Image (cartoon, rainbow, N blue to C red):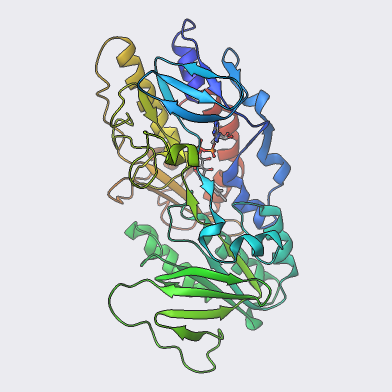
Length: 403
Ligand SMILES: Cc1cc2nc3c(=O)[nH]c(=O)nc-3n(C[C@H](O)[C@H](O)[C@H](O)COP(=O)(O)OP(=O)(O)OC[C@H]3O[C@@H](n4cnc5c(N)ncnc54)[C@H](O)[C@@H]3O)c2cc1C
């Protein structure tokens, strides 16, 4: 999107994209793939098709930065020099941060839409009752709502297949609330009630024993006792230590722990947490003025989504254009906008749009779609998620058109 916009601004700008992969994925649809309602193949396109015409595509990995000399070092192509640099390599999965998770994923004992959504769908169809557990880690993750979206779709699947009387759907999260935006939280708590989902706030997964199908959760409240669990409780929860429980599972989906890529973490561009150290409002690097960052890698206190990137790119571009015109990069108008299309069942969705302060900021254009309150479930929002957003992504956003 940035490269397309730069080329559209002036054909005299030399734009290089350093990108090693052959395929680009529309990841937001992986939630639907995991629930069997979207074809995985439709989420992929050859990189050559999405690469804007006119860029210099260097098909290689960035391995380190030399910001004092305005250079990026690559694996095979030597050093690339730049006047302005946009850093956007996304994030990486770090399953090793939860004991037993790598093995359980490798053996197919647990599933994740983040790594293999088709496998989620396979396991969901094999589920015939028992505990279906959905959870997420304590690290930042992309699309913070994705772990609960698949829980709602699975709960709907379980109900539609007459399995609800012999199933327990559990959603366990290290967070204290289901969603930070009050209007969205209210609807989601109603959704949880309607499905009879066992909502377990403040529980973080710390160990998975895939062979025995057991997960360990740590209770995250710094003060106060863990809730009591009666002997023989319906979920089979056992207290196994101080603020530590184990829960058996018949199906388990989770978001793996996530981190900035190693070459970012170990670079002079990272903050103390390892994320790209950019200004929250201008997206300019805090130490190197000709470097900007956006997307999942950026140390921004908002949800890591494609929707956020849609609003970040125009600000980065505006600031770079200002600098090219010998002005300051003083567009500080990024307000943390992000959005999370929370599918709450097959054919229903709530659209959370919000800023750094968790204000609910619905797009006025939704009214043209006859959606007057996007904090409530609506079938038209499902149509937006399944059909319109993929279309806008491939045909507008990647082509540099602001939507
Ligand atoms: C299951 C799931 C559901 C989601 N749902 C939604 C949703 O509903 N709505 C939404 O808006 N977002 C959603 N997202 C999040 C969204 O997909 C991401 O926020 C977005 O793709 C991030 O874009 P990015 O460009 O920062 O990173 P990426 O899309 O990960 O792209 C990073 C690129 O950098 C390249 N790269 C990596 N390392 C290097 C290197 N060393 N050198 C050069 N290039 C490198 C990669 O090959 C890749 O092409 C979801 C994600 C998942 C996984």
